[in-house]
Amino acid sequence: MFTKEELDEIKKSINIVDFIGRYVNLQKAGSSYRGLCPFHNDNDPSFYVHPQRGFFHCFGCGEKGDVISFYQKIENLSFAEAVKRLADYAGIPIQVDTAESEYDKFTTIMSRLAGIYNRELKEKSAETMAYILEKRKISQNTIDEFQLGYSPDERTFSQSLPSKLRTDEKTLLQLGILVRRGATNSDRFAGRLMIPIDNESGKVVGFGGRIMDAEKGPKYINSSESKYFQKNRLLFNLSRARAAIKQLNYAVIAEGYFDVISLFEAGITNSVGLLGTALTERHLRILGNYTRNLLFFLDSDEAGQAASLRSIDIAEKLDFGTAVVFSRDHKDPADLFVAEGPKAIKEILALAIPGPAFRVEFFSRKLDLSIPLGRKHLIEHLKPYVISFRSTGNLAAVQSTIAALAQKTGYSERELESALRGGMSKSSGGEMKSGLVLKLKDHIRIYLQHPKLRATVVKQIELMNESRDLKELLKGMKKGLELEELLDLVDESIGRELIELASTCIDYDTAQRVLQTTGLYANKRLVEEEMAEIDRRLPKVKDEGTRKALLIRRIELRRMLERKMKGGD
Image 1 (cartoon, rainbow, N blue to C red):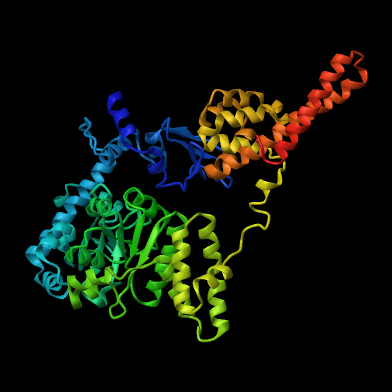
Image 2 (spheres, one colour):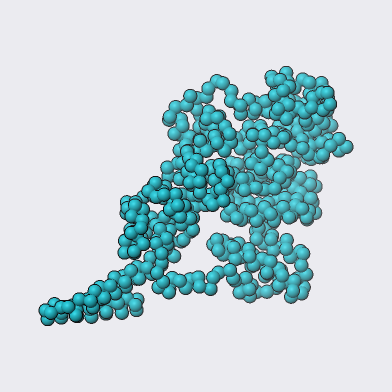
């Protein structure tokens, strides 16, 4: 059905780590990445992704394969459907079988339905059109761009949908377009302004509907969840915004459909919206393909601000830079746009504050900072965040938090630096200087993460007694094998240990200090062992010349050892 060349091109064009990272929280582990396996109940991360060789492997359940087989399994797709969607995702033209896939049929029906709703709005619903143009101040061009529409609350409209969509009532009921009400079927969105929702590839997969008569139901409803419409995986307007997000290197995240549409109307083309859900890790992994910087423009009420804080927390855990903006005088971006226009939108975006500073602002509202106890509580509340930022090397977040705290409390940044220190073991940093014996595991960890140091690591391991128990592993390390190749040489228990070691990050400078410390120890031990051997031989030596030579060698070794202990060569 597909040629080998087509399949190879798809696999080469898609970064397997980024793609699988949409579904699995992957952490760097040497030359590979690991996380909790999505295919079984995995409490101890045993799922590996190998970017160099383009495949994944799970030690726990044995699942393995390439990006195509992963997508098949995670989304429950046929091989052909997975290939076509991945080709679409990668922008690669392929020869497609004339037979429509389930996905193609679904998106074709949804696209036709969006066109029908759009024509209803333009031709038959002057009232809804006036609402969009006059009350929401959205232009005709933007209406066309988003293909806004209307679903009339008429039985004849619902009855005509099967023929207009070239399918049957049963299919429309299964897709959630029609719903059974009493003895008849009616449109799920009857009486609503319709907003088509695209997936990342620009295919219509669902709808949001805003009620036009407030007495006839909830303000907004969405399409029912399905294989192709999952709110925790979709971001409204991403198909239009992704190029601008990549170019500007940040995304504006809003809550509602009209917030995003209003931002678009104001010229903010890098905005996306949540579909009535909280921000999820899956949303972030998708956005991570385009930027690592997020600007949250959520509602200005208490609930919206709490949502901003939760969003910052989850984004920081995945190493995103964050900023927050909100309008004190207007509920949301759409209200600000209607009241003050595009200029006000751009001005308020320019006033965004870093996420860590917003956190200080949010918590300070609940405390009386005019008294020492209130200031103390604020500092103690933020201390865990600062410790976490330091541990992950996020110094910008540390500085942002301290600067905001200084402004709120009146304390100097130096005083706050002292108050916010903590969380590090008192012995941390001292171990490198203590000359303690480091275990074989420390060397394997360095080997997996720093290829330039591998020769030194292997040399030192050979001098350590522990190496005799892992001869096969050491053989592989001597050859310079990567992690995924070393896993083939060991059993599962040792393989799991390698996974753990590879996931514990150690920076290059620290690794060098470790090897320097253990190198000194290894050399000292060799010298001491040679001196001990001379001491054992001396009582038995009869020849005066040999005895004199051994004594001279022992003096040289003692001097060498003293120089080593003093830091000499």
